[in-house]
Image (cartoon, rainbow, N blue to C red; front, side, top):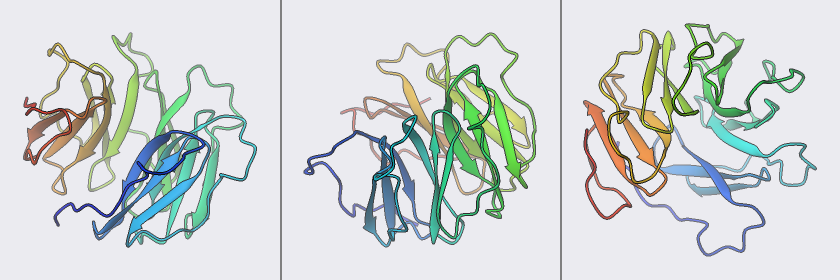
Length: 226
């Protein structure tokens, strides 16, 4: 599967900033999610609804597609979950007094559950998502910004804004940017299909590769490696 360009929201008069992207299962399209819950579709990504017409109590921070690509979940910073298409509601943290905001959502391989990750490394599990540990009891140098499940669903990686990586379950450590003087903070992590590596993305477009992840370019004007 090769990544392709299918369009962008760069020329649109956005009401709210884009906060997340999610690829379709084929890799031939993607969804963009805005903080107000607006959804933008490109390639073979289909529109199944949005929260753009809802008076949200808290902003949307993440989007996750279902395994079929026929739906998606939106997660808000207060842990609220919004479901569209064939995405099913398995619970939320919207009624919990969170110590720190939710920053990411990751579905299980079956699509019958999901993990929510908070900025302090706390993990909340729903449906068939299993708890494999958290960074909630660790004095973090920098906040958690992303979560990525392993291909089996029996583990996950947490990524911090300083490039630190935390592994749980069958997730393996392949390196981190925690000892690098970053130009800009890390904002996302994406595992390779094998689970034997991952990419880290920085807010300036820099890409860091680990394990069997390969470098295919970046938006920072230069190559960033481990």
